[in-house]
Image 1: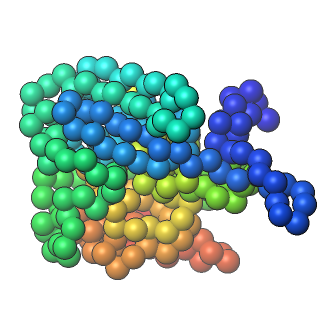
Image 2: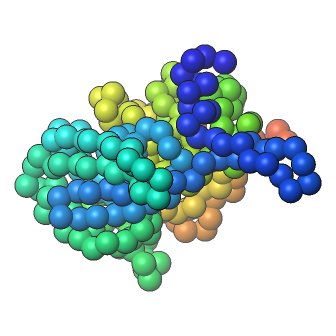
Image 3: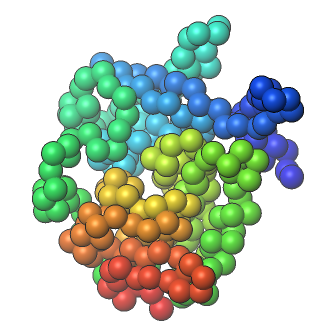
Length: 269
């Protein structure tokens, strides 16, 4: 195990004594307060990659279009026990500050904010930029290699059994980011934020999710221009409707040798 992965395991897990004796390694869950302009949000997350989480959340919620909209990110761990860690983000562009108005209340971060009570696919897709048909194009054997690479990159799940993972690859199979978190939304936001901070072109990216394909993960991906999603667990009906409505590719990775493609526009080779 590399020093970086050891550090991630140390920050993201904690050993607890069991009543019957012995101990168990479990995933850490701690609050993070995000302060963005005059808006305050709170999420429970696994420590690590806080700046990527903040940038990815703002991008996947449609507040920022790129890291150029972000002026600064300042992360401060809690000074003492009982306090929360804090991430303060300053927005550079007036357009991003205007879009922030949709989140101008104190609440827990939830991917469904702004779409609660709506099952209208056309409404959910409002403001999402058109996807390029047939791009990126990925061969099936490459997807199998991506899944194996994602599993090798996971450190917290094998140790604790309590974390979700989200990985983003290039269409050729290069791993751009793999992040884990107690929350599947946070894991995806961390991966998205990492790619944006690295100046990756997400329209050429492929997302792999270690769990099910809920609509909220699909809509987050669409907002940042990702057109190809593959999941280990099954997608929901609304996730499939969103893929069809937007022209995205949505598939479930092979289970016992059989993959299921729910929608595709020529991207699966």
